[in-house]
Length: 272
Length: 357
Image (cartoon, rainbow over all chains, first blue to last red; front, side):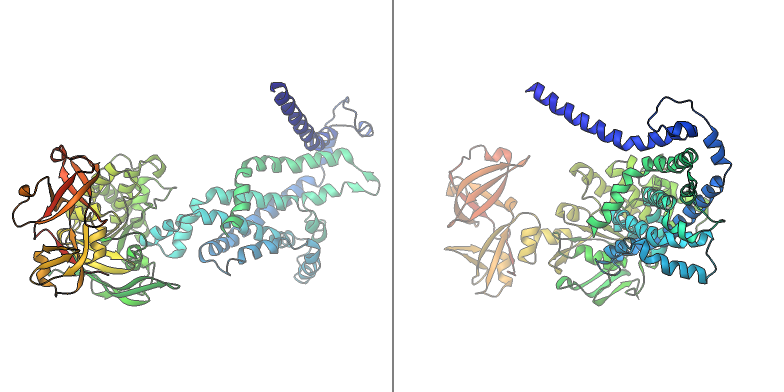
């Protein structure tokens, strides 16, 4: 009986280790590749090599740092605009059932539009407005999917705030708007933070819109990383270094955000 | 009659097909403590919310010091409110919570600090201003909520079942506290509760409601001793209810009994009515010679006794299959046993005739 239980636990542990290895392996390989010479990269599964910083040095002296800055600017502006517009929208959906019960699901549908459906009108719009090859074009394109997601995310948090808090604020002299920003918003600070991080990560990772709407001056980091894939071949060492630079913040942010992600993504559905 | 600080005139409020409040009218004098008492869903919280401005009556008017306030939003009504859940702002300290109405009003910081200190003294929570609500007990949270409601010196104080989340002992202490504070400040207060002991012990007047309709308005003594309707007789305290008919000359006919009831004289004979007699107003005797002269008597068989502390509630099966209860001091029940046949009696002035509804 005991040995059967031990055998079951051992099998489960083995499967979990295997799954972990499968998940971790690409990151580990990329990290190691960033410290390999070109010659060592030709032996991809060779773990015995002399590490070098040459790839990191070349990467940091390329356009990549500027592209990192572009990604940070785009992410920050997108998130700020998403919160500015999304928070009142989410509050409206939660408190006043704006648009009926189906409206909160319609918000999510907007986020599910395939990028390929939007890129042509977006491109033409940015061209007309002379915004191609500017960061504003990328921000506008990112808002098409991040704003609905942030709104959806926040609806669950607003649902959790008891209506009595706002009513108390109103009896204490606040208008509805004052009750919203003085009492309700501070109460959902963790949710706002999680939505901001979540939105930033999505913006940070976008390649599709950035590839098609940016040019030499406005490229973001994912586009810069894709640029290592040239006609001459893939500059794997520098690309790996750039990838590690790109995913580092995402992994760190995920640790902070994960607890709120489930609540935010699920709350809008349950409370609907 | 004093100044009428709050008036509700023929208020009706519906939610879809449900009528929560129907034709509710009430005048409250300045400084009066009025409780709205009734079971859950009777409309008492709806009335409170109409006064506060969170609900707009479908018909009728709400007056505050003679001014119609139906169209006035909550933030301009000059009322203070304590919710059932206290609604303390979790991201603010006790001091910040209490100062919040003053901060919104734009009071200088010095004035805010002074007022907060004054209120903390009033509710006996000095020294806790830097704590957060989650660090307080239920009773302390309730006091903070009360202090906050009083901060801006409102004209009317509204309390929506503020003690319902607390245990019995704390409830008893705090309701006396609330009444003390209200009396000290002389503020008009509307108190919503489903706890009759609470309502009767601290109110100047009690409004008993059921299904959106006022059943009776009166002092606690009136409500308890002279229930106006069958609902009030059943809801407030415990009553033995005898369904029968009014007879001639102060008599009440119940099965083959003819009771002499002083209250029956006021009622036209021949009508169906209910006689309500409190268990404490009834007595037991083991022989007919022990029954006081002039009392109404019936035979009863003792069912299980219920120990309630200083008194024992004796359940008895009387005429037909009806059950009544008699409350006796514990020492008076020593000789009684299950199944014993006894004489149950009450005096003519003990009973009250109520309308059937």
